[in-house]
Length: 380
Image (cartoon, rainbow, N blue to C red; front, side, top):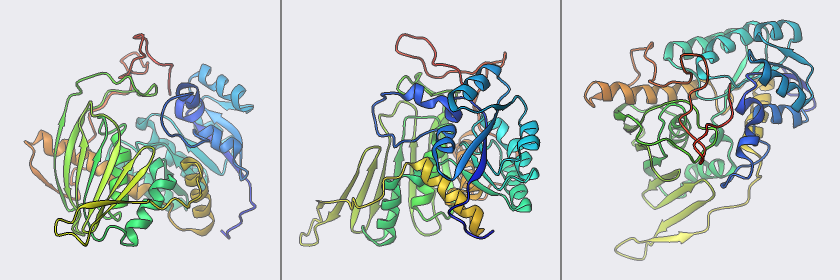
């Protein structure tokens, strides 16, 4: 295709739950930094280059709410019927991770030009490979909502590292409050991105049962394990993934030969060594702040549209998402084998992470409770 910034794409949503349709109801007035718009239906509805025409979800209540909320009349309980009837060009997939693989394959087989898939990408490397291969065969661009790749602070941080702003990068430490798969996928992907997007050569990991029920994030669904991973990258960077349950806050610290870059959820702190001192103390420096503050999900959608029209890979794509999944699986593999050293790439392509999204009756499993002890609202 020829790049055409004026083209408007027919768009549809698969999975009309929280991240698909109503996440801002749950996060309304939540403390922290959230750049708007946020959520798949909202960005497809409000972006000038997409027209939201249809939605699919097996839950009639969620589907009806989606239709009324976003003024969409074409509603389907089966996503395959929607794809055949509506022929959307762009599809966002916001269903639980167990369903991503068949839905991506179905989209690719039905001529969808671009897919914006929610994270976690999928549950096994075999499924990830199937998703990537099906999109390549059909010429479909596949993007994954590892949102931090579209965050202006992260983009500027990566640029600073590429420019040698803290010298040679030696190590990266990422810390978050547990859930290696459902939440940790963001941090495995982010460290890979900051380390140059070349997968590690080998890792040692440890996973463990969660110690608490998280109450800080209303949308926290599913049971997952926390843990830690030490990774050695071929370019010399060492990384420590500090995802043990109950940690306070989210942060990444990048350590270089000439300084340290500390990335939090609301700000980035830059410190450089005092070259005039024998002790090389770290002195505070201003982090470059001239940047476009585009909402991360909007940035990734626009990046996907450009990928559709130019043939290049999206910034957050199937391969980068597979790399994050491989590190999560390697953490569990190392742990269950006595914390042994694991060489990458993993040979077991059928291994899946130990997580629970649904109860035996099909209802959503909640790992978080509200302050009054009641579960949050339902999700896809």
